Image (cartoon, rainbow, N blue to C red):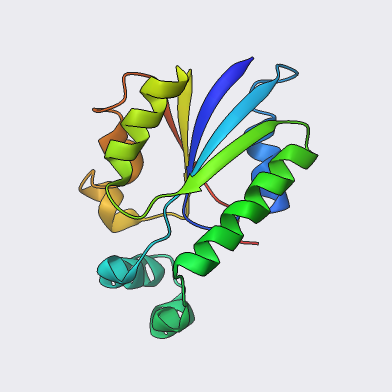
Length: 152
């Protein structure tokens, strides 16, 4: 069985679940999902990303998204349920702070084979290599694959 640590920032859509569960063909996959919601601290970066992507309406209304701990927990449970329904094993947790330290610890504890980082495009962070995937590549000791979450 292939062990994957999956970092996400919002609930998985059906397309996201299909993407991550079919990456290894017919091989069984188990997931440890780390839900790290994007908080107020990077509101400006998200607005810049939205402008770069041409989503001006999102940039203007970014502050309308309440992404607190309750929503993060619900999003995690939604994601775990859909992964399990697809036939994968899945457990997870909401990461309150220090996501990369938590990621490294989970990779070591589980003996993970890979890390998948599934997020919306974050062009400003990616340009400066400050996105999770770029930073994780230097911390975890296993392959890290960056995937873009669906817009749905």
